[in-house]
Image 1: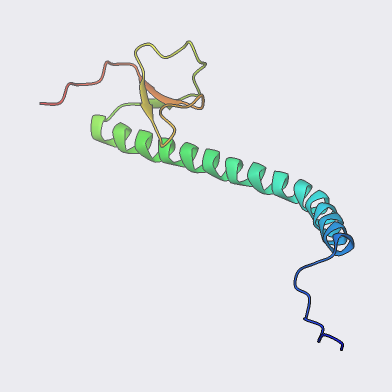
Image 2: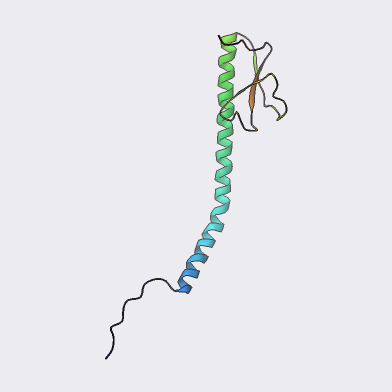
Length: 106
């Protein structure tokens, strides 16, 4: 008496290795593109921060009727400056410096 064969479930080791090899090749192809994408996003964030700093400086100059200088500060050059932009805690600070000290808010 022969028993009916049950259908087998799962994958063979060969099928898993082939799938893993294909995934590895695709990852190697996609890695440079991912690096370029991350660099592009970082550049876009930097551009947005600079644009925000310039808009803020223009507004401050109009409000105070004076010249405002926007400069990138080094890590140790932060005394007597006001940091603006979305990256206030990062190494890319865009300080706004004035000839006169900033008036205190009341």
